[in-house]
Image (cartoon, rainbow, N blue to C red; front, side, top):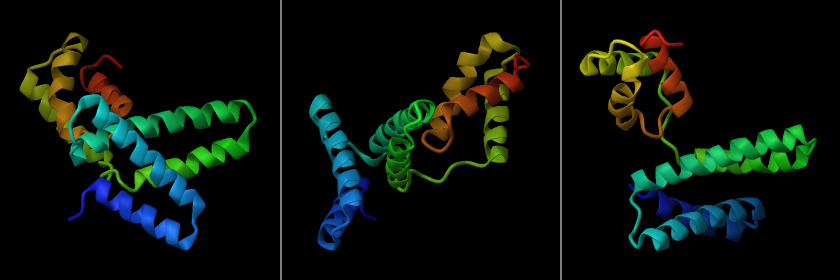
Length: 150
């Protein structure tokens, strides 16, 4: 199975041949972000690290969309949404609420958490299991609910 970098490269080549300027722009942007991180860290990124990077890029897009909408710049918000849609194709499928609740419940039991003071212990157990497959804010909210500190 090709890596995310390879898939992005192929998408870029295909888009260039077909004249799809928007997809070329998005794939180049992702390629540049990956290369920048690789140069900064002086190593090749694996798919797990690239997924984390894409998660960060998606959060930036979401914030930009909100800001553009508040500023009445719908055309820029639409551009950011299109780029976010492109990035989401590389992310793993999101977990269902039920799956997430089960993982949180198991982590609360494993950490022997009693109240909101134990939030950190539970989060340390949950986050590695849901990395890239669930929104961090949602995970935190669920853990707080489980610990009775909502």
